[in-house]
Image (cartoon, rainbow, N blue to C red; front, top):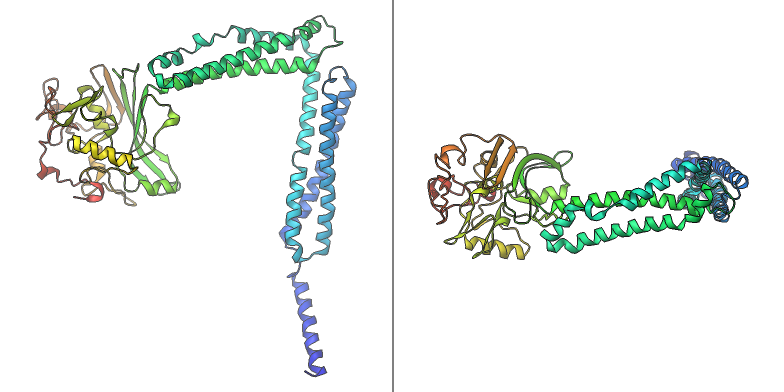
Amino acid sequence: MNKRSLGVLAVILIVLMAIVAFAGLDSLPRSVRNSIATAATHVQTDRSAFNQARSAVNASLAKEPDLFRSQTALWQTRLASDDDKLKQAESQVKELRELEKANRKRDTDKAEEELRRLESLRSGAVSDAAALRAEAERWINYKRNLPQMLAEMRSKYDALHAFDIESQAPAAKKAMLDWPAKKDDLQSRLTMLAGLKKQGEDAWESTAQARAKAEAKADSGIDYGALFAAASSIDSDLRELQRGVQNANTMAAQLYVSRDKLLLDLDDGQPDRQKVRVVETKYGDSTLNGGQTTSKEEWESIDSARLRVLQKNIGMVVERKPTGKYDSETERNIQPPAVAYIAPPGQANQYGSWQNGVWSWLPQYLILSQLLRSSQVPTFSTYDYYAYDQARRRGEIWYGRSGEYGGTWSRGSGTYGQGGWRGMLDRLRNNGSTYSQGGGTISSGSTRSKEGPTWGSGTYGGSKYESRGTYGGSRYQSGPSGGSGFGSRSYSRGTFSRSYGRGGRR
């Protein structure tokens, strides 16, 4: 290459460098430069606010040396630490300004790192100084109104000392007898509350000398720090004691409630939602007799991952909280509706018993079974129970021997097998009615169709439990096709045809 060519190339390079410089392609991004300017302003504002707070604290310490005797050294140490952080932040601003002045794109990462470090330095310094200022003003106000503060302190102590945990926690004490598995947990909560009460009583006793001097208006020698801390502790312990007993009673009450969420519909909108029927039964004691069952339908927000899991489980129970468990122990495993209430083969429980290999519900729980499942689902046999139990142990979802349970949701309308799950579930609605039998009560806020198979002459007829079939060999008769939930196998396969099955399976 000759000299002329080299000269032309040099000119081109110079022009390109000028273009890059003027175009800002080799400078710090505008967002970084703006952040540097903002950070510098914040640090300057922080310094001004800190100086004001520090001056106020120092003035209070100088004005009331006896009041702040126990706190002066500690507070001065904290202020010195806050001041040191701000000095480092100010030094960091100078370095950032140098990077801004150099204006090189290659310094972008360094500038961003410096900005992050600056934020960590300044954060907390001003708020700590402001907190000390507020604390100093609070102490001065306490001393100014010392007689009133002492009266409030005594009032809170009297309430704490007179608080009888045993008499204030009747629900928790009863639950410890009814639910032995929860006895240790509930007892530990009450024991912790007893410790809080003693802690408050000890705080009161520890300030006897300081309170005596304060009441005699002998300011000299009073440990105001200990006195104010004790007053705050007694107040806090009393509130925690009251709240703790209330929580213990609330948790105890949860043990007497069973709750199922039956999935009715899904909506992949914003946000994703699920429509559920919440069937809840409250009992008076652990015998689980005379329960009151209610149901309601509502939409709940869910995340997208949960919606994907539920798309093939319309008509299934998606959450269940059995009796003897806290609300925090709610199960989210998907399971066939009502099956969890069935006792193992050969056993009976308060809900029913096995008759000739078929589960038979007791009359007072027929409505509960209807709220949780379709009357068209076939009878539940010992074979079904063992299949369900084995699937549960494997962590799998059991959909019935031939896919009788569950249905697939489709966007926009929702389906439940071939027949449409909406119509099937509508037959289970109980609107504005109340059912009471055998000590149990069922009520609901939805409307049950009078033409449904489980009401009027269709099921109970004119007698107490009249129906058109057998009830698993028991003295209670249940309906065949379209009858009461779990009855005999006398339903018509020609009518049933499993058309509502999971995803339309046969």
